[in-house]
Length: 127
Image (cartoon, rainbow, N blue to C red; front, side, top):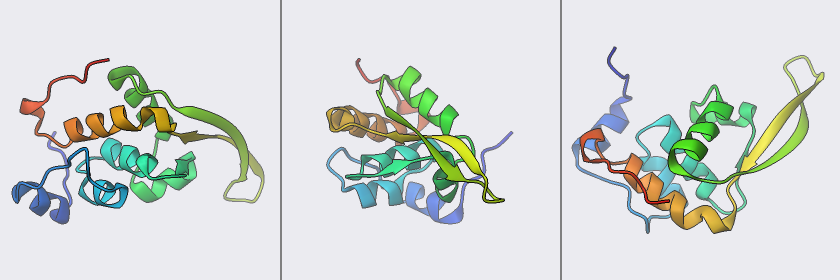
């Protein structure tokens, strides 16, 4: 099955723009070509954190799986904070708030740069 790509993402990728490790968090999020890259770029911004409902705005419908992928496949460590938020009907719902500690930012930028490359050119990030 072919991946769906939004037209603005496609045009950015066709123009050869890539994400660098020195880009600003806003620029990183804007240029991120995939869901996992958008979430990582968002968490790289100072003081940003996400729970599963907030991640919907970034196009992520299963944030726990995205965080698990970033942790297990790329060796990133996340802070996890349990919290209660109102669900659709106003009742409290248990969720986890994820954030990226400052100590992980350099590695996360390297992972984000890797995720912005075409799949053929990707090589793992050293642990």
